[in-house]
Amino acid sequence: MNSSPGFTLVAALLVISGCGSPGAEDPAVTEAPPNILLIVVDDLGYSDIGPFGGEIRTPVLDQLAREGMRFSGFHVLPTCSPTRSALLSGNDNHVAGLGVMGEFLYPEISDLPGYAGHLADQVATIPEVLRSAGYHTYMAGKWHLGEADDQSPYARGFEQTLTLMEGGGSHWSDMRSLSAVGEMTYRRNGERITTLPDDFYSSKSYTDAMVEFIDSNRDDGRPFFGYLSFTAPHDPLHAPEEYIARYEGQYDDGWDALAQRRLASLKDLGLVPADVDELPPNFLTRGWDALDDEERRLHARDMEVYAAMVEYLDTSIGRLLDYLRTNGLYENTLIVFFSDNGANGARPTAYPGNADGSFLASFDNALENRGLPGSFVDMGPAWARASSAPFRFFKSFTSQGGIKSPLIVKAPGTMAGAGSWNHAFLHVVDILPTFLEVAGATYPEVFEGRPVEQPIGKSLIPIMSDARAEIREDEGVGYELFEMKAYIQGDWKLLRLPEPFGTGTWQLYNLAVDPGEMRDVSDDHPELKTSLIEAWERYAEDNGVVDHGGRFDAAYRAAYGGR
Image (cartoon, rainbow, N blue to C red; front, side, top):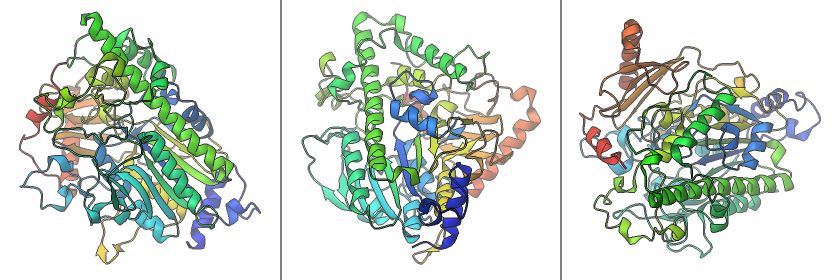
């Protein structure tokens, strides 16, 4: 069991939350360190959920936001597994082993620890550290950080697991993969599962598993860390038919209209300057008015399915939170919710082996079957752009649409800042130090006999009751993935995207007035631009970033062509 400093920190956190004072008789303060529930969803757009201005029905997250704090400046990595590596290690994705995603490794870099394609041995993980501190550790959902036995979540600190090892696939029991050359591998406590129950649906079944895991040790007095890692709303878009029906006709006016509604909602929330009226150019797709009636019906149905997936996610989270309440666990649980990256605008033909269309032709995507078993439909760049409005692009890009995520944090007890916003720049590496501070745990210098790189994140605890607080001041954060590059320092952002998405060279943006990254101000601030380029180069050197020599630029052009 953990030592007393952790309990002291818990007491301090509960004071921040308005729940008493150190030394109070409440056993939640004096005896029990908090449970920690981490909920990560997959490819959710910044403004999809109600607390961030979306029209999709999310009453559970709405309530969580009222009880907790919303963070408008939370940043992740552009794609799934790099974000998850940084999340679980508290370190840059290049240090954590996901300098590129495992699906896209090539021989020249495969021997570098930062490009292992799986969670590297040179880092320790949240569950490894918390388990050493006396926590139960549970995981249900998507792993995507290595598929071998010694790379599974069961081998990296989780004591009970039900996990999808790869990046995605069917949300039903049929286990159909994302691509012609892929597969779906499920493991329970390290052992491979070859079949799934007929009633399997990813969001339902992962939630069921998490409830089961928590309940198995509910009365032993030890806290738990639960990582509920949904695969929804990652494509293929699938949802129960009755949920899809709730959104019939809601998106018939198209993606351009939705983007404008989302922009207006964000302005109403004060998350976008009131004078921002222009959206980034939408050159990856046609305008809604350019489609024929059949195309509109099919695309509107796809967004209906997406919205249904998100609402069902909300329902699933509600079932878990209700379980915690019923069993007296909710009040002493720290809850964190966010998305691993922005909405997904890639087409299914971009997945390995899908370019010729033959694999995708094996699905039944008739209007009446879209979103149901046997179908494979997606958002595409137009709906993804609307989900990301007013930001530039979406998942896979280091522009704001790819790396900004909605974050909700609910501290144990009743938070003093309940219902408020914090607008500080935050990063996914900040989650690990937050959890360790709450638990009173210390990240080791050596774990299981091997030296481990120290985390670079900063705990959120100092800002969890102060809407104006910062944890970084003027400290910058660097990015690189697939040759998409960025460096953010305060309101300034240095960005490099390949042509035609950018210029292929560094551009400079003032995010405070230009959140859509539409006006390059390099000529107005040449000295600042030079200093940020130098800062990015230091970041690259410190984290072992490899120069890929342009090999990924052409791949992006192929993946994100017109639709």
